[in-house]
Amino acid sequence: MIAAGAERRQSGCSGNCSTAPARRSSAAGSEPASRYQTDAVSMKLAAALFPNFLVRCTVGIRYRNITAPRAHHNPFFSLKYPKEFIEPVQPAPHYLSMHIPRSWKHSRSTVRILSIDGGGIRGLIPALVLDHLRGRLDERGKTAEFHELFNLMAGTSTGGLIIIGLSTPKPDPEDQERFVNQTALSIDDIKKIYLEKGEVIFPRSTFRGLRRLGQVVHEKYSSEPIRDLMEKLLGKATLKDSLCHLLVTSYDMAKGTVFLFKNRPERKDRHQGDPNFYLKDIALAISAAPTYFEPVRIQPIGHDGASMCLVDGGIFAANPAMCAYIEARKTFRSAKRFLILSLGTGIVTKRYPCRDINTWGYLEWVNPARGAPLLNAMATGQCECVNHQLRKLPGVEYFRIDGELGEEHVQMDDASPANLAGLKTAAQRIILENEDSIEEFCRKL
Image: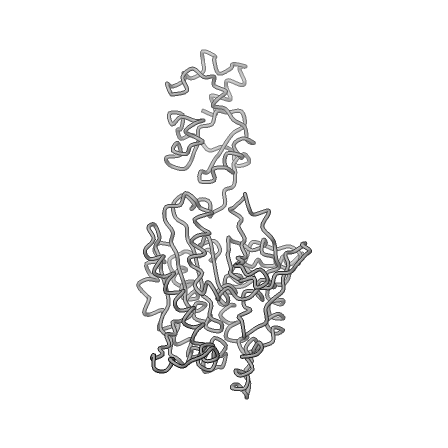
């Protein structure tokens, strides 16, 4: 077709020349051939409005190549280009082709989501699970980075820190103000941070019991160590510099509302208007667990006015998988299948006989020495609710990797060598217990 079009142009013939191919019968009837012509600008507009189809076009030549199957079912193409005119031809030259992001190519059929729970130092467990998953994928020849394998990644608290780590770009060695398309941290680096920096963030104290008592009236830890660590690891990278579509949770105490940090490169209608933040500030905000760290005052880059007062999103989304699913549904609107990998930080089910809690007042329900029974029950219940909902939704394949922890590992701030060793052992057990699910997910990813 391209050759024929070139011959017509060279000979000066229009589409009505006797040498031109006869038009096939269609609903277009006797409409002029110009109706089926386009230029690069209009086709780019079409691709932006209908990103589910990889469009290739050539200036001044009748459009015929749509690489996605059943493309004529799209309303745009069914109105403009009857299916009789859709036929395979040679692709247009690369300089006239549009680049469609990898995740857009999946948007029509399957969306892949990674979600990681909150849990403080117990984030070592999902980090070890991801390290194991990385090895399994490498064995299958799937060597792409996590931000390339998943269309969307979401996290709460410590899970959000892992997600940020996996999507933060590496600074350009020649210009520290710019970034390259490569992650600054690998999952192995993140695992080492938990093992080597845990006691920096959660320092041990000889008077641990006294510190717990103090937690009743003020935050337990200073935010300075984690602020310094995030500054060193994340530098000047911003939310919009991150390498993937991501979502991390927080709660704005000043406004009394949920606040979700989002980088939405696929949402062309919203991406430019979304507020931008430094990733180091986001990391502080999403890890500001009430009674452990002070709330974080934060403003979008380049914005003046009242600051937000943010705390850890674990108060409403200990398991952010449902938040991630809703975001994916809004972004990939024609997707038919959602493949979700949800990683927990260990199940700690503390049981309290009714005779023991009959006389409890406020302090007993939130007593950190008892493991904060009210907060623990709320987080556990929310996780179970999300798990149930996602397993029942049509079109969702939900892979939940989690397992029971002993009461000796209940504390989210115990970074002692003994507890870290116990968490590593627990992670290996969880991996073994979920081996079949991990294998099936690797096969489907």
